Image 1: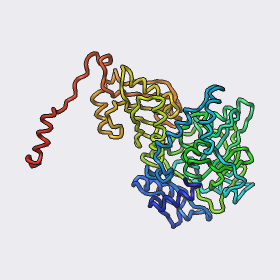
Image 2 (image 1 turned 180 degrees about the vertical axis):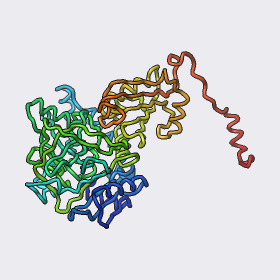
Image 3 (image 1 turned 45 degrees about the vertical axis):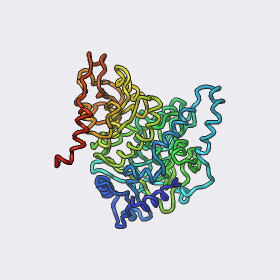
Image 4 (image 1 turned 60 degrees about the vertical axis):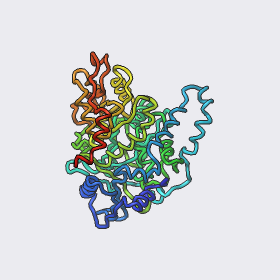
Length: 477
């Protein structure tokens, strides 16, 4: 497993999955457009070696630009990692007696807990009077409100449980000391801030990590079930504990990170964030989010800034969604054993659409699966769920479209959930975070659902099939 971003970059380059750009490039719009064009053409990751205005810095992007990148990142199939996570979920105790019984099982994960070290490469340079102007943050679209950290790993700790969050919440830089953290109300970071408020604390310590090993980086986008600690999850991905240092604000961060920004988020200080050109392909309008106050920077002597870009699909975020889909499939099957396969289509905008095949057993089974998926953190914001039969290939859109067209009666088979929580950056709803969801039952209907026997599907008889197979060459076709 790659111990840091640099080792991963070299591994990508060795496999022909990374290109270096040696001419000077501008972090204002130019780099973002290069990364987008490279993704749209299915190209390699890019390491920019000369950054305008930032002499010691390099910038890397598109490091998860397709499923083959994850093979390099984790050295094993994603579903195998999901099976390890499934074991952890299965041994989570719900009572004291269960805790005693499960000690042995839980101990098997001890090697994947974070490993505290005395000092790390991220402490090579420590800036006590820091400024965001030191960071080569990108402006990615012409009408963005400013420069953004687009792949920040925002570390925080639940004051009630000590559980860590690692979340990729975009960060808009306001000035040299302040930034806005865009964590949605459904996310752990927002929940932890609420816990601080409940305890009478106005400020929450936060560490923003830029440029980490692939396991920690992917953990930032993974919908890990609470209360599993995200640092433990990163260790499960890596197959061993992540080396960390404990910062002065009591947050553990990767010792081999490129940059760590230390500071506090003020729960009572909300300012407009946005507009920002998001993965929906539209600018999300301004909304109020909490302010991060920068207090200290730790970084390597020659830091690499990790960036991503979003916009109309399919860009890097779509492939991160596909990786989440594969990794969490074993857990979904544990909860909903009738599920055969799932597809989050790259052009479905990650949380926009999910296609699910099931082994149908009873009337209303498809609707049961829809409700079950919407009840999971991983699918709670999914706007459209399409359920098909087990023999439909969810990754073949022709088969999916045929299933919808040939089995769905809109009045009977379409479920609308009005006035519910949705993605806060979903521009289709007039109220941020509040809209509707749709489920489509595209399965063949049982007698109780159809009011009679479902029509028989056409199929050629075996005698005719064998005849035509045998004589095919005679036909000259």
